[in-house]
Image (cartoon, rainbow, N blue to C red; front, side, top):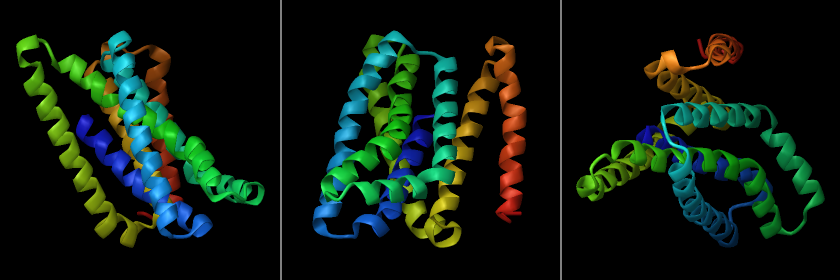
Length: 214
């Protein structure tokens, strides 16, 4: 799960930059501001993700994190352009515009997905003597999948799917990962939560048909 969450985050970072480009341009100042916000969010969410994992960890929390991320991405699929246009008409300062748009569009999704890594490590570590090895393996493979997500988004997803279609694809992938986590512990999932997934899949399929993916 760390692998997929890191890949989704890296793809979403690139997509977020591409979505912002028509509104803020592509200057060095712009890219420096965006990269700074991404690195700040990475450090901040890793810290709070660790605190979250110390209090709440388990398979069911992973399910909820992916499900919430899918809902946020689904919302952004429909509303990101409207939100950015509204902000651009009311905020003239470039740095403030990037910061506020990041707070609304980027930080909530990145927060939910960055928490996945500490929770998975907490679940995997049973022997304190092997904790360093487990953290190293999980971090290394997670970074590798982040690189893979970056390459795939640059060479495959953006040229062939387009920006907004990728946001929808990330939403569906997060929803599917939530379903897989729930499936691994199906007997412990509450009844009303089980009925979220069936209509959810139909909604995604319906939108895919409308978008002529099939």
